[in-house]
Image (cartoon, rainbow, N blue to C red; front, side, top):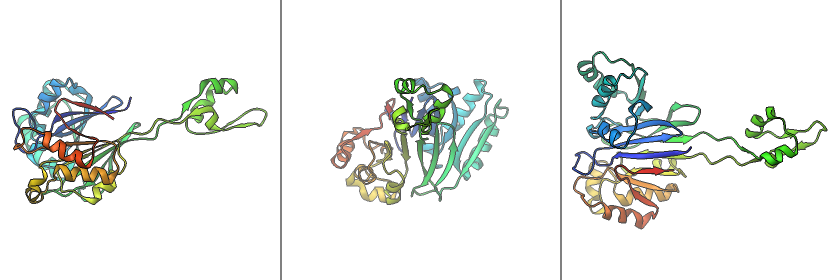
Length: 303
């Protein structure tokens, strides 16, 4: 089924009448993951017809308000809707310390458990894994401890070439092994190579989320070759000094990271509220990396 990403919010710091703070939903073969949760996220989930009950894991990049203020309200709504299954929240160490008193005050008797998973912002680590994909963190450089997230599908099985398998009378019980790359030995001792009996496995897809941060060589190395990279582009190049001072990136710098990493597509977001028209930021990025798109709210990008 693949991976898709729906943009719920793409602004930095202050929400505007047209853009909400950072939040995204990633759909990996029917598994839904919320990435950051700025103010207004639950309204954006409704507008984009994302069923609340499908979200079991929330990944928070850092503890600035424009990435986390939507969580208390979302958790409260989960309770009012009668959720009973656990909600897993992945974030840096202070997240539970900050959020738990708010939850206890406003949502004392939730019908579900909140399970906090602590992230070490200084290390690359695998923080989630299921049968379909794994989620890893990587350090970035911002004013407070912050991480990026890398979502990568696990290697997929090879596809059965049914006509050829029928020709060689391959038993059904052998097919799972063929999908995993095994050859087939016939009763007469003839070995049939796997390449004859199967088609190559579909490629494993990947998505990297990187905000808020200075442009880093280390990020380019971690996200090398991913199918889609979301990288913050808070300012244009004429504000590079301000970007550096506030530990953010420009649109050009985001594109340079994408180019160096050899990614297939770049999404830019986390825009300063000073920009009502985003086309100049897109043009600046495309000068360096042509396959760039604006992370527009309500837009779903298929990977």
